[in-house]
Length: 150
Image (cartoon, rainbow, N blue to C red; front, top):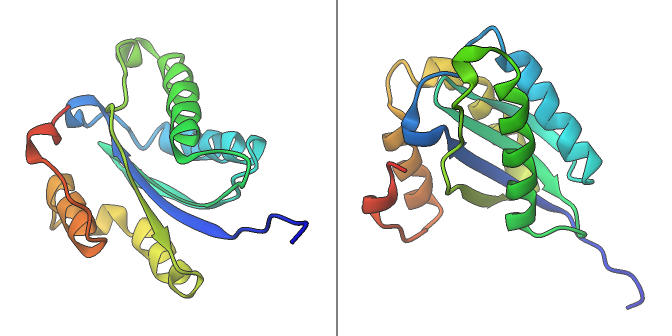
């Protein structure tokens, strides 16, 4: 076959360093747009970007030209630099070292999109740690709890 064809949807989740709740409503709309621009620049079409005060969810279509680790390096590095320009309160901002990335079937895109849209409502009832464990369990990912709080 002379062509390389892919359609790989990813649900990516990562938090601020040490789960610091600093992603204020005043910057998140612009932050989500910034994420979208980075994703478009590396040909990873954004579907939905959202989150809560201490973490981010990204649903995107992974480009066949980039690995997951390079995608995460690029979006974390670029957005971290951008956030630090948004005021003195962000001068020490960092993302956590790790991340979760889960494939999503095209038939589940709407469900994941709605899930991301409802993060604030969702986190009135559940903390990030519990949400993340639930995602890992649903996706049958082995994990070590010692590294949850980096």
